[in-house]
Image (cartoon, rainbow, N blue to C red):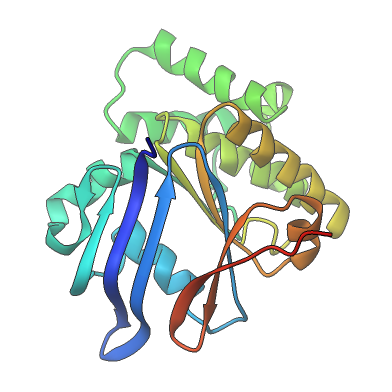
Length: 227
């Protein structure tokens, strides 16, 4: 039996008064790796922002990791985001502290208290992205690909049910993009569900998977051609 982690039914997504996407019907099940593609300006980021509570869902129904997006209250948003891991294109690391301290900051902010447990968790997620030896460095001492690995590690800290990766390879060269994709693929094989917005079609060809496309105010599943 499929286990939906995300369901949108007849949903419309607005940015202010502007209708960005209409009549959205999407289902993502536990363990899936799903791409969200589309040209710049077709609504990929608005779609993602709706999922992590940055834009309200005012029309239609939406459920994500047991939260009702239509009735999401301001006070629920931090708890929703603990069940999601969000990876951004521009890394969003705090530049004034080391990688370890970046991750400890997130753990403290999400209610962790035990220093030994926190240190162990930081080491665990950095090991998953092959960055265990770089924890003492500052973000500016790392390459773009390394910073994005750290951003993925940060997204994993609270064992999220769903990882939302918004153009995670957008600022990276092709080789580094492949390395970051390998990390995401490994995480997915370990059972994490991933929704990744991208316009890097080379990655889709190299790592084919279920694909949703934003186009002309719609979101629809693209049927992959079999060679």
